[in-house]
Image (tube, rainbow, N blue to C red; front, side, top):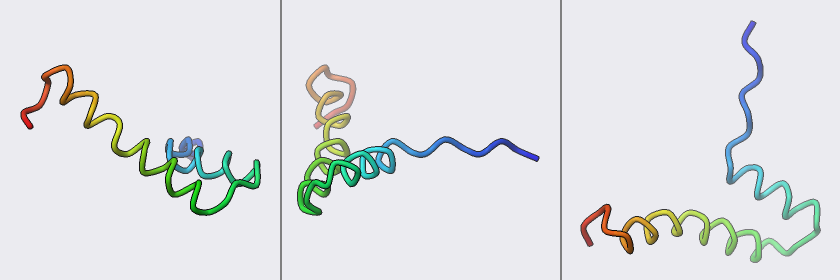
Length: 50
């Protein structure tokens, strides 16, 4: 039997935000920021073309 897979990052973020009783809109904003950040970081350091 396989060990359980660790939760994905965004699922962990959502769970932490819900435990703190933040609003749903705040949860959405944080998740969107996390989704966008890696692409912007790679673009700024020149790893991907614009």
